[in-house]
Amino acid sequence: MSDENILISEIVDDDDDDISVDEIIITTNNGPQGIVTIVENTSDDESCEIVIVESSHNNVIINELREPEIVESSPNNINTIENKKDFEESHVNRLTSPTFINAYSISDQKIKKNDVVVFDITNMIHGNCAHIPNTSDIYIWRTGCYSVYISILHIEACQFSLLKNSQYTAPVSVVGSVNAATQNSNFFMIQINDSDMITPTSLSPSGYACKLQLVNNTNNCPSVTLGSYSSGNQLPHITASITIQSII
Image (cartoon, rainbow, N blue to C red; front, top):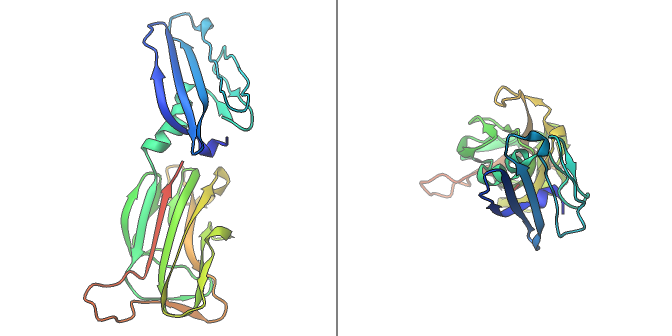
């Protein structure tokens, strides 16, 4: 079970004044995978502090912690647990404080090869991400797994993809259409790692983030028009949209 698949479905606390026992039940989409039991001494005698990690899945090794240090388990389960606080911050907070953004455009755009789509409006935004309206760049500065949905309304046959830090194209994001004048969409997932936090930006607390853009990869025409087709309706069509949401 990889770190990305961990979900905490239940936390059970003991009410003893001197000894704190937490049982954190670990589940994945395949069902319960085991129990992590964390025992802490809360009395004045710090020399008795002990943490026990155990699981019923894949024979996780049992470790004792006398001082605050990393307790390692098997590669198929929890990778590291420094202490209960770090464990809860890295997993519980990811579930209760998600990162997501939805941005879109209603203006017509002529996108040349290797140029990026501009998003006029930031519809919703929350967490460790940023987007300035009327720009192409979306910044994310929290690692994790993200679901991404993109949609474009194009006039010519085309191919678009998600570009990371102006240099890496996510293969799962590449989508195209051989037909002109249609709507093209794609739903996929990507992983953002510490190594992706390389683009300088004042929007991030650390000064660095992972930059994401929607880029035109089309080879067979000089540019692709994102337009509203002059359908006669009073309300403008959305010509491009992107939604990015953290999963874990």
